[in-house]
Length: 477
Image 1 (cartoon, helix red, strand yellow):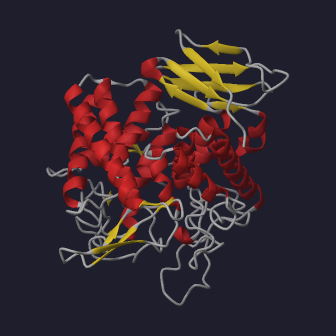
Image 2 (cartoon, helix red, strand yellow):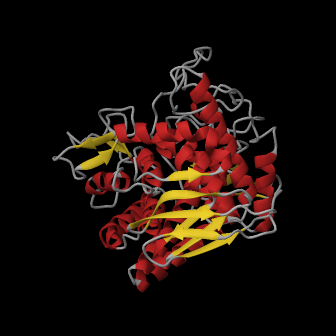
Image 3 (cartoon, rainbow, N blue to C red):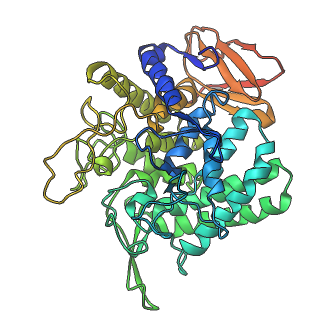
């Protein structure tokens, strides 16, 4: 336990038990197998037969804080080993049989291309630049597969079905459908753009200027497409596209009316100008849309399909999409809102942990009650069946009490290749972190108490090498 990070912040005292439980459950999901590509890897905690790409990417986003303990990034190696010659990586497969589940084919079994983002975050945390040389070809090949098989001639991107997007039963389109169901998926458009940016930055870290330049161009083109085709100025929101008559040369494209949490991916991708950020923030603050008691519901409250109980992506609150939104807000300079959403999410998780039996961490949560979220009823006409999602889920749910507590509540942003930490905080009491992974070292940081927010505190740094810590205040709403 001594190598695990410990956040010291007055607003995190009540969630310390939750954090300890997240680390405990995550460690219980470590698998050791000498016959798999990654000899030590993490399971998501519910399926003993298959491993999942989407889940693994998000688990790596908190495992980066204890890389000697949690083999988060190594877990991606199981997927790189399964990559086809054309670049395809399955969203789930059986490590023992090397087979994908029978319900999925090659155009229905892909998850979002998030690995480049995760690999970049990992190297910024740990400084392991050598890993880039081995993974960059996999990331480039995956990007090629997506751009040549999941993108239409008109430039729209598509998932073959809902589960491929990670939002299984989101009412954006049919759960099972044919090659995207004639929908242009806004999340994949943003994710593909962000993947290109991350690949470019990874290439720069290993001095591959050619790849860096190539993917900067891809990033620019994809961001331009995202803003030209998916931004709806009328309501100030990014939306999916409904494509009518794709079999004809002169087809029509309409905005979908469904407002879902995936429409905030463009913030993380760096697509938004100040006006767009302002509009998206207004949607996040609107109680009729995404500002619920426990933020952020997977679909807006004013959608007729919204369920206050959760019902998976019909209204449930998910740690992985909350983390995406918070990271996007921080990239856009919205630190106060990012912190507020993070605190409310962690506080509700902690309340459910204390009040609901079994006392554990859940797969998803209700947006309106201190309860776990319900699973998808799966069968039309049986909406009254209410079963909570999976317990002991770390899994992506550890993102709240670990990553969000460090990054958006405490406010720590690491960049080891630059030997720099940026600390965004408005706290005036003593606060800090012990055992922060920064490169090959564990670092302790403490900001001394001050009298007012107008003062910059003295920072105590306990580190074996010289590092730069820039402490910044941010504007409150």
